[in-house]
Image (cartoon, rainbow, N blue to C red):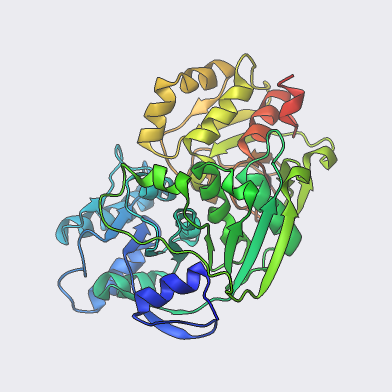
Amino acid sequence: MGMTITEKILARHAGLGEVTPGQLINVDVDLVLGNDVTAPVAIQEFKKLGVNKVFDRSKVVLVPDHFTPNKDIASAEQAKVVRDFAREYEIENYFEVGRMGIEHCLVPEAGLVAPGEVVIGADSHTCTYGALGAFSTGVGSTDMAAAMATGKAWFKVPPTIKFIYYGTPGPWVGGKDLILYTIGDIGVDGARYKAMEFTGEAVESLGMDHRFTMCNMAIEAGGKNGIIAPDDNTLKYIKFRVQRDYTLYYSDKDASYEEVREYDASKIEPQVAFPHLPENTRPISQVGTVTLDQVVIGSCTNGRMEDLRIAAKVFQGNKVHPEVRTIIFPGTQTIYLQALREGLIEIFVEAGCVVSTPTCGPCLGGHMGILAKGERALATTNRNFVGRMGHPESEVYLSNPAVAAASAVLGRIASPEEVCR
């Protein structure tokens, strides 16, 4: 019996010829990632181990992004713990404010992940890097501490669900809509501790930014990881970023899947997830009238160049509704600079948006866009749980950047076709 791409990567890193779902294994990791929220706990546990160095200074990555630039004394203290650790242990990939970005946008951009690698991070959206054909998943801070010391992590090999998307996506439909539609179909626990393998002609037609979005939200379906087999788009993306050897893995034709699901992407409309779960999805045609107080475009899910270009296309020549606060969060400094060079920042500002430095900001209720009681926001982020963006009696809706931009203009959740005619 053949193996899936996930099983092959795990087997290789465990030094085994093959693995099967449910098997407990110890694997070598290629990258260990932490941020300003999760790394301080890991650092505390690391120091209890009594070791005087990390397993590899080039394979530990620390990105303060959740509460940075620091919003208060507590967040400043958190960031200082990470900064001091990076200096003491000579961590090569520490990204300070000014060169930092949202970690899951920054790490692939910096060439720190390659196809076929195993990446763990003390953040649930570490599954983003599956878009490069890597096995990447979130872990707890104690697992991060152990990995920083040993370069190893243990896993139970997940079974794989194969998702096949055929057909050609319609106008304004992207990776965010495919994954929201999927989560709406299987639920927030429909892939619990399972690998989500995304395939099919619709996925193959997507650019890398859309693929990152899909894999990023695998965790919103409970997935252990999301993964897309590498192709020409992948190789083009990493060509000038990854300067080391890597291995391309592909699922065998006779690989065993726990389940196979097929979707006709040509029939999927732009999706909107209603409060308070990502599975509460509706096609844009069935949203009805939902007025808004705030729109957020960015985050580790939709803060990349293609996302900003799509939003700018909708904002071009339009103005944000006077009763809607609209905040744009470029994913990294590099993305911010590229958006500036392409004139996108000017479009956003002239439309009436606020453009922020790269940060997670309001996505987790951190800062720069917190909601008050009774307020309602539409965001391109990944979660809309109760109190996720502020007051527990506020509401968060999720969409792609085109829908978010159109909604900012009209003051209610709207299709971009209503604005771009």
